[in-house]
Image 1 (cartoon, rainbow, N blue to C red):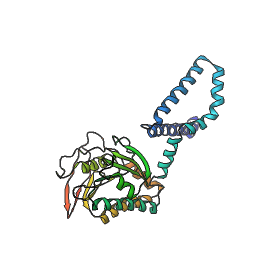
Image 2: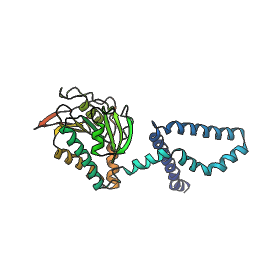
Image 3: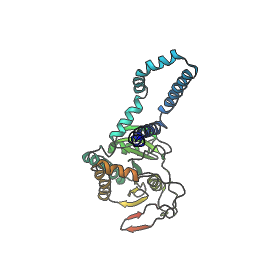
Image 4: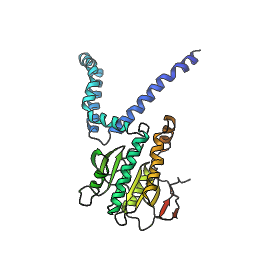
Length: 295
C-alpha cells in the first residue's frame, strides 16, 4: 500500500523538477548572447554566493534580511530585465500559433512587393523569415534594427549605397529584427556553378534551421527561395506567394497539438550527417531535395 501511495504522489515532485529544469534552460537560452546575459550571470553569482555564505556561517541576521527582501525580488527582476522581458513577450506573440491568417497574408504581401520592386531594378536581396528556431546561433553577425517590415524599409536596406545592404535581413513576424547578417554557406559540391554567395547562403541557412529564405539575384533579378535544404530557383511572384501561403497561412490555422508536433520535428542538422540530394529542372525553376542522414 505504501508503494502504491508513493507512486500516486511521487510523480508531482518529478513534474515540478522537470518544469523548473525546462524553464531555467529556456530562460538562459533566451538571454544568451544578449546584453542581459552578463547581468543575469552577475545577479545569480551575487545572490547564490551571499545565500551560501549566510547559511554556511550561520549569519541569521543577513539570512533574515534576504528572506524579508525576497518579496521585492520579483519587482527587481522586472525592472532590471525589462528589455529582455518585452522581447520575450513580443516573440511569443509572433509565434505562428498566435498569428492569424490575415496577419500572415499581410506579411507575405510585404515580401512579395519587396521582391517585385528589387527584381525590377536588379538589386540583390536576402530575406530570412524566422520560424520556430531562433537564428542567433546560426547567424554570425548582424545589426539590430527592430522596425516594422515594409517594402519601403526593405528596399532602403538593400539599396547598394546603404551601409548595411550587404548580407541578409531577419524578419520575425511583422518586424525586421536584424540586418547585415552573415548566413552560413552550404558545403554542397553538386550545386550549379552559376549560384553565387547569396544563393549558397540561403541554402546553408535553410539546411541548419527551419527558416524560409528568399533571395533576389542582382545579376538577373531572378527570385529564388530555400526551405529545409530545398532550393527553388527563378520562380514567379505567384509561385512564391503560393509557397509562402502554403507554409505560413496554413501553419497559423493549426491547433495546439499539430503545432507542437511540427516544432518537435524541426531540428538543427547534426555534424557528421551526409547529404544525398538530386537536382531537377522544371521549366525555369530548379529544385534541390533536402538532406538525408547517413546510415
